[in-house]
Image (tube, rainbow, N blue to C red; front, side, top):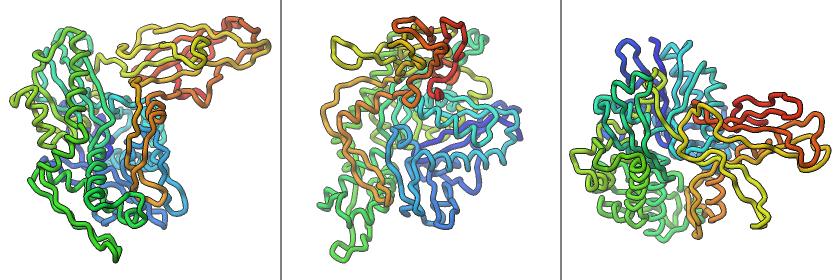
Length: 530
């Protein structure tokens, strides 16, 4: 059975779908050894829990295998890979005398999924579509590409998760209508306003135009963290306590269970054996009302409203307002939390909010995308070149590609001239950055991480670290990538550098030696400069 493959690698769960060329639709596929039926909703969707367990003898267990073997609470089980990779987290877990990074765990996990999917579907000469978060930086996208290449995937493309969700809902989508996609998954939360092109426009090959989109680094794992902190507070415990470290991983699993149970029932109880004689067990009960109060205390509903307003504001600049939205399509396991659905229904009305494809819409849409349904989309972040500003006495940034730029770009967006700093200079370069939202940050925040022993703990994130996360130095390991032969002369205009955005939303560079006429790079991805 041949078909184009779509993969939604999630923080909590991963879904795989394929495009059936004969039936012209996208459907989920089950990878028997790894798949499980969703515990979040009543929906009959086969999903793969984003879990990987490393045994002492070198064996690896993936997805539902980890659950069936009761290894979810093991300190040798890696979770939340996508979230850590997206944040460039330095967290490592010590397993079998080695430190496993989220990048390695994520690669092992996805490689196993890809190999198994290839056995289910004939992928020869077919294309794979990977979904990526709206707020993803190119380092995450490049990591996905590297994993696909190592797994021997012949061709692949990337698509924003909200855009994929619009396609994945399928039956609800009508040409000429405007939709808001609200995607609240394990690691992130996105809102995207989508216009489905008319039949006449679709004849040009375009089917879906993104009018406005925004994202926040808040997901289901964030809620798990809030519950984790609240349980410790209720019991007058601290994550730094060695006793707590011993059962912290167990407690995180229970926090996720409480969150999921309260999406379907009014009460969820916790009883956790600590293994400590002085504090033998933790007992507490959560009601839906208490969970909603905790979410409100952490300003979740405020964040949702801000996110939606931001995407609507961008769409309004293109002439589309809130009243033009035909329906709101909710995606992601965390979108099934009743109070989250209520927040959107209060703004858009009950009849416009749809919740029937929360888990597989993104994977379905990614499969449809690589089957030929294209997008008129734009980039989410600014790209800039860093330079020394004498007036400020420090660094400043020159934007070379503005966020909102439609991709792929038909011609160079910006041209720069690189000049030599001194006589005899043999290597010239530019420090190229991808810039997220630049917001003044003055307060410490916390995030839940796993230390090398596998124990969960709360880690403070300083304002400087938060700012650093919004700036990604794309060519940090190759800042001088322009070889001058013969050597340059001080002040000489030596290289002409052009920037473009390719089909996979990557910043590319074309560089030519002005003196020799030699083409050094031609539409080469910046993240691959070496």
